[in-house]
Image 1 (tube, rainbow, N blue to C red):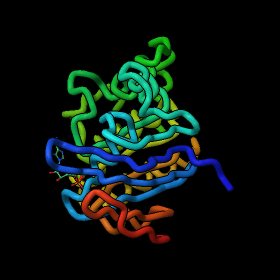
Image 2 (cartoon, rainbow, N blue to C red):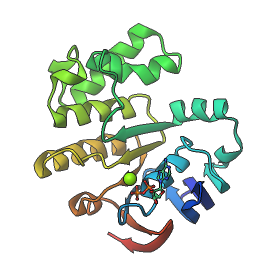
Image 3 (cartoon, protein in one colour):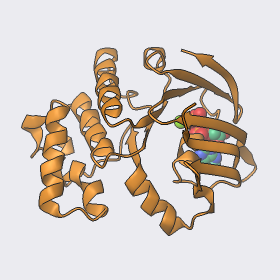
Length: 225
Ligand SMILES: Nc1ncnc2c1ncn2[C@@H]1O[C@H](COP(=O)(O)OP(=O)(O)O)[C@@H](O)[C@H]1O
Ligand SMILES: [Mg+2]
């Protein structure tokens, strides 16, 4: 049996009177690709944000390996988030003023990598994702699919243990969406990163090893894909 890389135990999250997560149990293995599906408002994004330590939980625990990240201070959590996790969200994750190579290097620079080294590594990641010629473009100067591949390069460059993706293909056409997911899964596999991906797209969910369905703040169905 493989060791779980990430686990939620009885995770509760409320927004005022709304219980977005009503005690979720979830386990993700190292290198596993898990899709989270379910109706709008069922708690998918909230679960992703709590598992990633972006939002604090109101109850339960989240473990990264054996470490309970729910018990860390905000400072410790954000440090851990930067080093261990990567994020691919639909929009807003790339800095408009920075070039592609600067955007991809940013998490490494924040983690203390010297600038030259970070930029060199970023260029390699851009090449890997087919964006070798776009290293000096800004996010506003590339297509939607290229933008998402840029975001993937940024999410993976510091070799995180877990990649969180929230509707990463939501703004893309089907073909570009599929290519984007292929790029994500290929590089995640190379680095043995687990991928937790929230999606409405059945063709994306079909690429996962496991599909988790959420309903009313709880996991409803667990089926093999
Ligand atoms: N920032 C927020 N403030 C108040 N309610 C929220 C907030 N974010 C989400 N919710 C509510 O929490 C529930 C779960 O939302 P969410 O996790 O975004 O679901 P999903 O991603 O599945 O669409 C919904 O009822 C939603 O309206
Ligand atoms: Mg959502």
